Length: 307
Image (cartoon, rainbow, N blue to C red; front, top):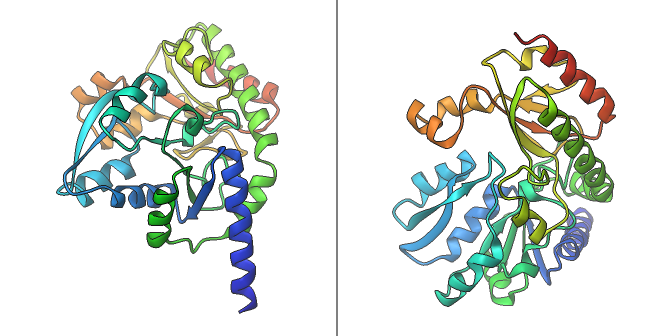
């Protein structure tokens, strides 16, 4: 009984902290970001229409196509998260409200302490806390924040939250400190790569060269550490790395690089990958909190080895 009481107290404490972070009145924590999305989908009626990005996390796509495929209808819009494209929330808000549509923002990649989607008119904000909130690649968790009491009460009835609250509490204690370092490191890495002669293009929303730079500046001054870039050659770039880990996850204190063009071979045909820009010279970076000069030196030595 004592352990249950302690867990409930810590759960309430975490939800209050996350709600404050999002300028929300209510917050629910649960097993994972995908679990939080599933709860949101359960709020919708039969044959409800969902407006989604034309390309998004494979776990969410699988859930929509295999689990909710007969219940929900998808409508795609152009921006996608893997290339750091952005949706201008304010420009869609009026149309969505007129159609009585529930507007939800899945926050993980844009997880900056300065970005507040609820203040921009969203009804729900969902976050995969596994990434930047927990921040140490050792915890699986998700959260749902809202200012709508009815939504909160309905979600509370169906949630599942049996996960390690203590690791999440530990991550929240350093979230803003980590976020500041990660954002600065990522922007320095992106600027370095953009100037490098062996790099074709860098996609980071806070670079002036990014096609959605004005959208980003209109919504927030902050962004976390995930960005992508194209090399000018088809080379074994990641094998030359010494300080970057190789993997698809993101949001931890260790920097990593994923050969995203290669990863997407498992999900799309050649034609679909070319259309989406997932070519074999496409890479995604998740920036950590290491000394940025060490990271730049590692990129430099790896790029020097490319022919």
